[in-house]
Length: 273
Ligand code: BTN
Image 1 (cartoon, rainbow, N blue to C red):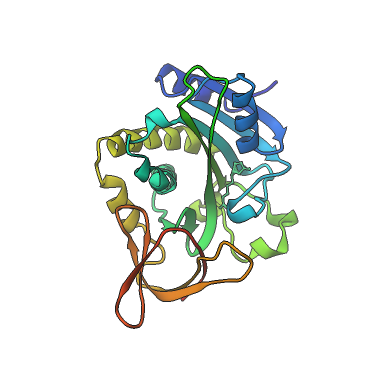
Image 2 (spheres, rainbow, N blue to C red):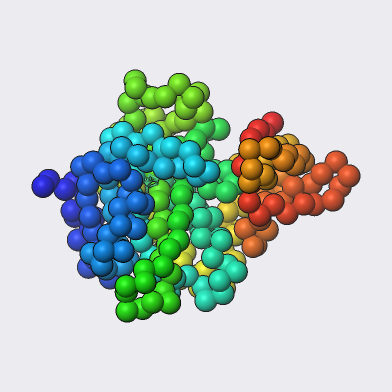
């Protein structure tokens, strides 16, 4: 099978970052495939799974992810040993990934500003160009039974043809190449992103708050008035206020009209202005 990511895989392997690779011309979802293969003991980790197309791409909050070719779609399967020992910090992983992705895109496309919309959207000129979906699970059949695995799923619109795009994303989405002014190779972005992410993971493990300063520097919502749905049910529970960035535990800080700051742990930003 022709694998356009082969040289990226081999290079990351020789750098000692990745143990196993899979490339799929078409798959339901790289996150689902990572979970299946790990459960069947068919994958060592860290592993990198890349898809050309997904038939059931998944996004946050039960949403789908439109997954044609032109979108870079991958899952990095990481054991918890790659994360800080303190489990309370694990919720920050999506933010560390977001910073790494933004830095990688900018380093490939000079002059581009990639911002981060809490918790894990990549934004270019006010439109979404990528997102991160992290799922964690245990593989009971594996010898390291206590090791938890993280499937870090990332979708980045690189060279998109919007012709068949669902109507609801057309106004809100953009892609890297149309902002860069020229076609961009997804392989180059992937290679840079994985290396940048491993650098950030190393520093994060040694308690450095570097990711958090970098995140706030790119915070798309800072200074904007936001409305956030924090409900887990179908009845929305909205919090409104002015965004003041994220705290070093990853919570979004929102200042209400009364002046008090409310940290938000989980939620969806429904509007901003
Ligand atoms: C979001 O913004 O809601 C997150 C989108 C994450 C999409 C990626 S594409 C690769 C991986 N496989 C999936 O099914 N989803 C993630």
